[in-house]
Image (cartoon, rainbow, N blue to C red; front, side, top):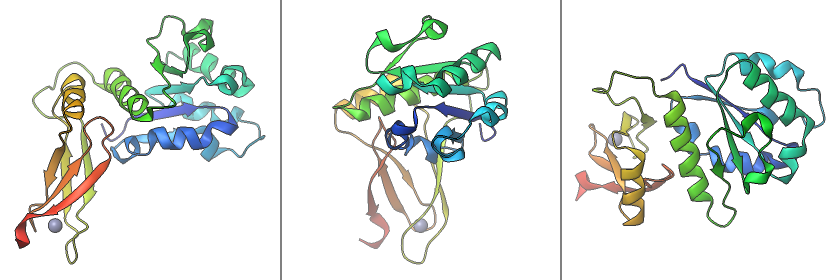
Length: 204
Ligand SMILES: [Zn+2]
């Protein structure tokens, strides 16, 4: 999965929103390219077509601004023409234009952004998981142990499916990974994959 690339198209004013939605997803070994981080506001984005060509999936942020933005419209049209699957993210389905009408949309929940994060992650798992190879967890989150004096690599394996992760979230549970060197346990939010807390089991 480490070679997989995701392109995110959005209106310039939505960059903060996009970065918030992708904050924890970016910790996965994926290459997430956010349009506004690659080309400054108001500049020509035609040069990003190469990014779209090399992407395995694209996400289109179709807020009120995004749905009418010329760059978003062009990038979506280009991705569709190049057979790059596009995931539309919108606060209401009326904002999703003709190109994407048959794509399953992700709802943008302003009041519950964790649901949007979860649904974007679900959509990426759907688009990027190839058939076969089910014995090794394809989704994982690699990081470095942050305990004093330890910087060992730790891997959070994401071997549950999305409905399981949401169920754990609903029950206030966490998913966790242990550092093999110092036994510190890292707890993550199952829906958003955000780090919740560190538990130093070895020292007690
Ligand atoms: Zn450690």
